[in-house]
Image 1 (cartoon, one colour):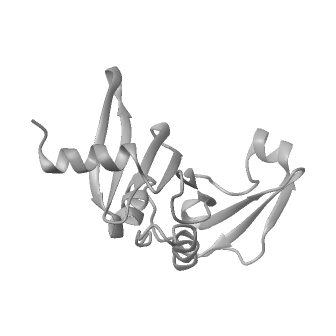
Image 2 (cartoon, one colour):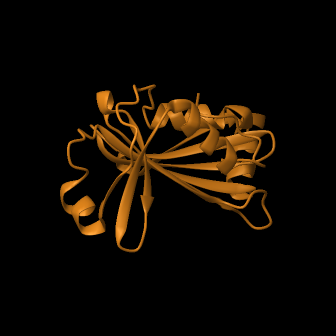
Length: 169
């Protein structure tokens, strides 16, 4: 016997329209969550200690809020107006100069077999009082662009267009 909500979770996880991988590096270290999307429901999948896997059924319209909660996203002041560009090597070794990075987050969305949406990526840094920064990685350089929460939310909504998910805020 499988309860109806459990059956819906399993069905969504086994045959999603799209799959999002959310990585968040913060105080607790690197954490990952997968979100399987379908027209009516999303399933948030997180690994727990001792080989336990946690599945949470989320209405698709609230999928963005699940990402925001997982990444500890908060509204921050915009402390700069100009982008910062540095070599990929400097960014990897030292991080962005002058920014106290509290956390980094990265959302990757890929359509499943025949699923909706084109897919894409949205990486950002949370630098506390120094604001939120979009991360644009090129072959040789990394550019950080200051961003308000409202714009980050618009970019998330554009990424998830077609999944039925709401935004981050």
